[in-house]
Image 1 (cartoon, rainbow, N blue to C red):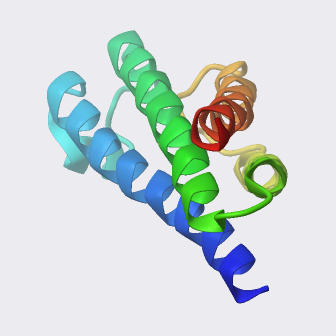
Image 2: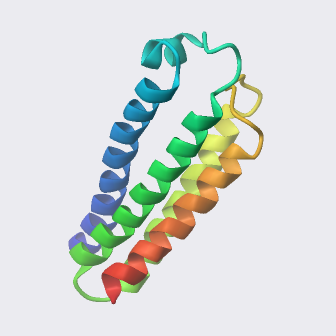
Length: 132
């Protein structure tokens, strides 16, 4: 039981680390004024398209890594553990969407759905890689 929890938690932590580092790098590279501009909401109300593409790419890599880490830690019954992580990502996507509803994020309306789909799909792809 503890190994199962650790597997899913380990995969999620791996995802979070990749996303944090990748987002900081994408922000520094593609947002004029970098992280401080994003924090202050001074990006002119829209997020640069290159940043969105970079962030979606980083999210896919993070999700695949999360699926692989989860299945490797799980040991046995690897695929079900990846599915649990994918469900957790789906739930977190809904929570995130509800929290950001009505706020001016500067992101296009489709972006939240794309991040959710990439996260869920990426974890499942990583799960297949790791379980195989």
